[in-house]
Length: 81
View: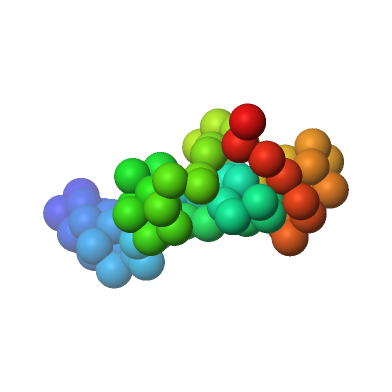
């Protein structure tokens, strides 16, 4: 029983941790961008010409799919009006 418990604890401790990351779709400087920076960080980096174009995504591919399906993909023209 102790061996089984020790093996379970070792497996949990040695398992690679999943990276927690959030991705967002923005209109920044009149172009669609997919970025890992949160809205506050984006405004600091890009200035006032930034607006969030969708929800927060847990996976980069989900954010890229959203940008492609709704706005034509990263790099396409957009407006924050």
